[in-house]
Image 1: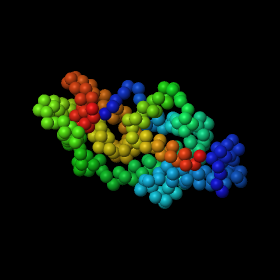
Image 2: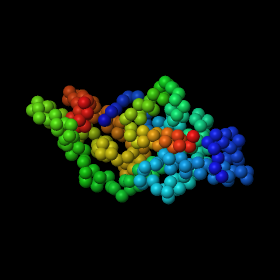
Image 3: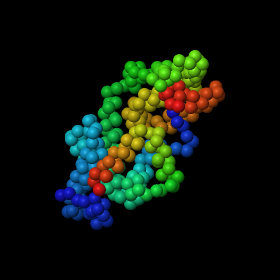
Image 4: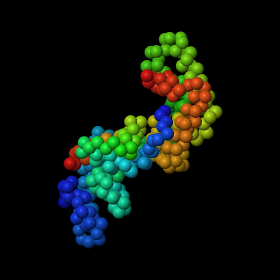
Length: 217
Length: 63
């Protein structure tokens, strides 16, 4: 029942997959089995991706690939195209599950909300903070950063930027904001542009912020 | 915290990903602007990089 990678995606194999003839069911099962192997290897070491999860994703990915089969243009190998769909589907589900029971309000209130993050010391910055001049500079940058986040960003921009900084993934964050990943990307992109412009107006560069907030040199 | 004027969204990267993966697996060098932007996106987006690495791991196992 298993087919080699060379056979999968060959013109004859693809034709049978698209056809309504008796071989179609065999090709579909070969595809599903290939995806099972690919998903197990790709998600190896991910504790949340157990056998049942991988079986479900392989099944869903098979259906999705069949729906999109006419959009396969041969710019890559078929197996690469199909594996990309399956792995991305798996990560979307894993990230969605991780944040499923967490409300955005709880998330931002419970841990490091944006203001808290900006007030926090990373070990690297703490080690450099013995210098009084550096401390004053850091405090000044923090004050400006907190102020412009409040004055120059919309509520949605600030929430999206803070949640992203805290590590919430795009798909669940978009869902909690009632939008889609593309619109969320634009929201965060615009927020960063506004933030950068506001900071530059105050004579502060993003490199200053990176160094102080994240300890990057 | 990085913002660039010319950068791809995650969805745009996803549309180019299969081609990018095949080129990387083949050791081919494609210096086209599109592929360079995918490379740059992976440097700043841990989620897309995580997906790319999993796809490569999956295909290396199957090849």
